[in-house]
Length: 261
Image (cartoon, rainbow, N blue to C red; front, top):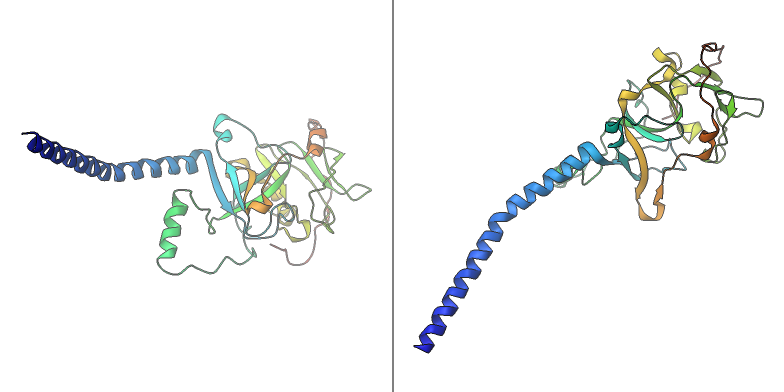
C-alpha cells in the first residue's frame, strides 16, 4: 500500500500545482487591469511625463527632454508662483511655428506607443501644450527693460542666470499689468520663444489664464545625463507684492518681424 500511497500523493501534488498555475493565469488579467488603472490615475491626478519638441526653454530644458509635471498640488488650491516652469494648454494660436514634430512611427509600434502614452507610461509628442517660465502673476507689473536691460517685476530687477547664453533678457520693450487669475510667461531661450511678449496685442496682453495650467514641471527625467530638478530661482523671492491702486500700464514698444517658436 505504501507504493500506491506515494503515487497518490504525487498525483494530488501535481493536481494542486496545476490548480495554482491556472489560478495565477486567471489572476493575470485582473492584475494588469489594476496596474493600468493605477497608472491612469497617476497620469490624471498626480504626475505626467511631457515631451519637449522645441528649443524655447533652452538651455534649461532641451529639445527631446522628458519632464515630469506635478498635477496634484493644484487640486489642493496651490497657486502658480513666480519663477516656476509650467505646462499649459495652448491659449489659441501659440503653437503656430513650433518646431516640427517627430516623424510618425510605423504601424503597430504607433498603436503600442499610443496605448502606453494614454496610461501615462510614455510622454506624448502630440500634446497641444506649451512649457514656459512664470515671470509675473496676477497683480504684478512686468516690464522690460530697466537702465541695465533687465526685466523687472513690481519694480524689482530679476537676476536671470537661466536665460540662454548670448540672449538678452528681452529684445522686446513692454510693460504689462497682469490681470488677476492670469500669468505672464517667457521662455528661457528669449530669442527663440513665442511667449507672452509676442501676444501683447491680443486680449489680456499675452497673459495666460491660470485655468489653462496643467501643472508645474518639477524634474527633467530623461535623458539621464540631463537629469535635474526645476526649482524656483532665488531672484523671484526678492520680488515684493504688487502695490494696489498703481497705474495699469505705460506705453510699450512692440517688436517687428516674424515670431520664433
